Image 1 (cartoon, rainbow, N blue to C red):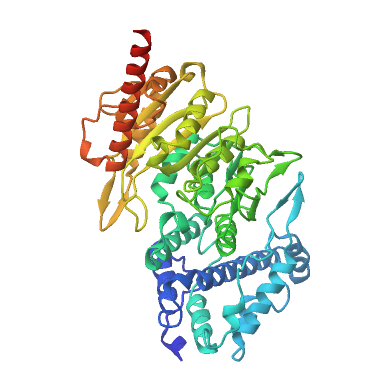
Image 2 (spheres, helix red, strand yellow):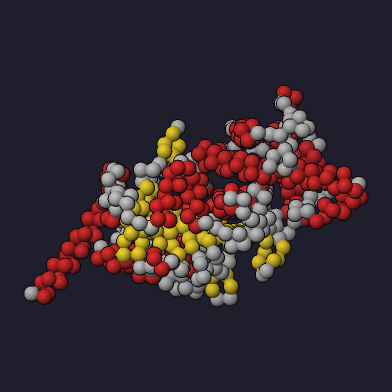
Length: 508
């Protein structure tokens, strides 16, 4: 059997991050020919999570045995964050040679049922219900015969994934690496599964989450944005475990992956809901949306299949700027996020298609209303190719419910389109570029060709277009502007000229 040729980790050996990444990807590629690449995540993530919680459980149990013996350990493990019932441990499944898929699924079910969510402060926190995702594939012997599952189990058995052998930050990095590899290998677009983590880091650096604040992502995907916000605090050696984490994701498997991601990053205080944020927001209080200190999101770009009629009569009052056109739901997500910001010091960062800054029609009047609310703080234009298998150019919309006095009535425009490094078919923001953009944001000043503070009055004189190239004279490269944006700018200027002529003719 294949396991005879495998090398196994020594008892006291700590797995390196590179080895962990390599081992995880090798385990995934053993499924080639058995299932499509798009299905890897359905099997690899549950196995990784199962092995991790089993190894951590053993590590904690052994520690209690050293403290006070087996009976003492049996009592103490009842209070662990994750409980593994008898017969549902990794080693129990590993010993089985027939109907392995059925045994594995039963272990998943037992663990999920033994770890319900708990109610804290009126909300449901944590819990493993459904965390292992769909289970039908494991018991389909044509798709996953016993020898394939056994090989996968032996792959994961090569390493001890306990906290001492694989710390939470290392596990989190490996998990994020796997998410990116799956998105790339399966050909998923950015909005379906993965957002470039350097962009997410930039958003977190700008929002500066604080200990004990609440963080919310209404389209959380695999949970990477939420994790990055916590990383911001961890990297500064600040208290992060008191942060309250919330997320909603429409895809059932992906929402499970987000919950695994948070657990594997050492986060236990979180509430991740599965559902459609626009049609059924999960976090509400009485007749209003629940509000949060920090909101960040990468909503699905310009979706056309959504319930516009329901949003037009939204009972949560999210269409306060107007109802977006059927073909572009972007401003529906924007309004949901703005309504989800705390009135005290709420702030948000939203990664969006560049078209939301300039598109005409119904969005033009919504954009006008948005500017007049004075919620918009900064608009950052970033470069193309920052997403897996997508050349799309995007922008980051920064809003605040309570802007500092110096920023009131004005918006900072930042041109960072050229601050993207492309290497080995991968584009990213370097740490230096992230620092530079954050400095520009914090300076709130004018730098030729790079950033400009513009009054809301000036924006109204440009028909409320929020195009960066309209306000920041691009000395770097005009070629980076897409044709659609230039056309929209031309139309905006043309309308402004026509309005002026009409006014002049009336005066005559």
